[in-house]
Image 1 (cartoon, rainbow, N blue to C red):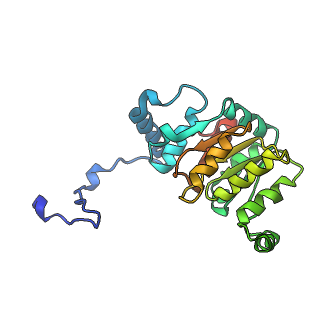
Image 2 (cartoon, rainbow, N blue to C red):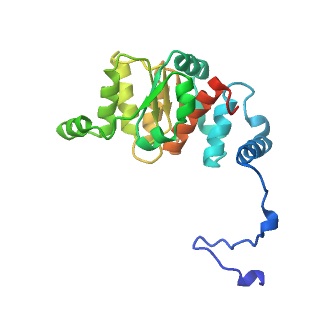
Image 3 (cartoon, rainbow, N blue to C red):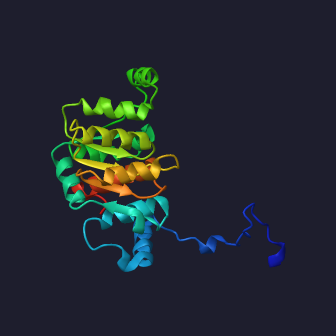
Length: 231
């Protein structure tokens, strides 16, 4: 087929011809290992030589987006604080059931931790309707009432980060870590910047990018570091 005759996608890109000979034949874990090798090769010295690297690499592995080299921000000692919290049995609170489902449960159990999401709880829905606010913000209040050390992993709802900021400002909550990676447009950028103004340890993806998958993979990177299963 002449190049001019190749099918064109709606975005205007022409399809490339490949064959099965172009496919790398790898086992399941070898695929992940090879992916991390490719990430390290492409990113080079832009990946820091400390305990942030495991998180940055896994976020890029999850998203195939090297922008996180520039946008993923860590407060001083955030990773150490997170690992210590998990060793102490902290609970992870997510803002979506998708993030909850993405957290590796065997690694979570090995750490002696739990993960919870309250978005589908009936009392949350009723309170959100009564107040005229999002369920995500009500979930923050529900979690804040728990007598347990908490890590918040927010991948979807900037309103959760805004409510966290308000409660931190008012001295009503002190999470062990905030993972602030909601994706989207309205108040997404601003909510992340608010969290970075607190004195709470944070891992934040500045800008619009993020997602529940990114929130879950950051949790997993921390859990894998604890159990040494997939470093």
